[in-house]
Structure formats: structure tokens, C-alpha cells
Image (cartoon, rainbow, N blue to C red):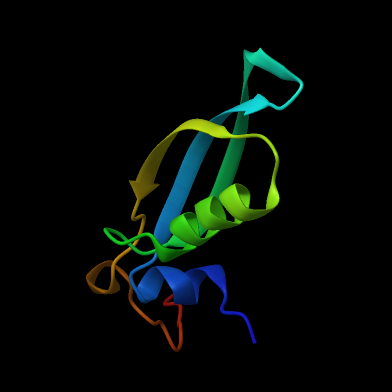
Length: 89
């Protein structure tokens, strides 16, 4: 069962965006880009490196380079679970 976005953020995950630069096998003089996003844990980034391994093992376009940024948008101390609400007046 997959976790919701909020559950991932509370467990320390953040949004990782990676830009892959690669060359097509038939057109090696052309540099192409591919953008990938997923929730991942810094500083190890296991999901990003799993995707890079998949790319190297399964795809024909060799990687030139990868740029990525990680943004942790929420931490456990910033979130409060509100169980009820009441209004006066």
C-alpha cells in the first residue's frame, strides 16, 4: 500500500527533481534532456539512484550528466493534527 503525500513528508521525504542529460544512440552529437520527479530521502536519495541504475541497465541512451535538487517542504515539527473545530459567534 502506498503512502499519501502528507505521510511521505512527515517521514522525512522531500520532492526531488532531477534533470538527466543524455545522448541518443543514433545521434550522439545531440544532447537531450529528461526531467524526473519523485519523493525521496536526502542525503542518500535511494529512489533517484535506483532510477539512475535502471537507466544505465535498461535504456540505450547513455547518460551525460544529472542535475538534481531536493526540497523538504514539511517537517514533523511544522505539522499539527487538528481533531476538531468549533466556532464562537
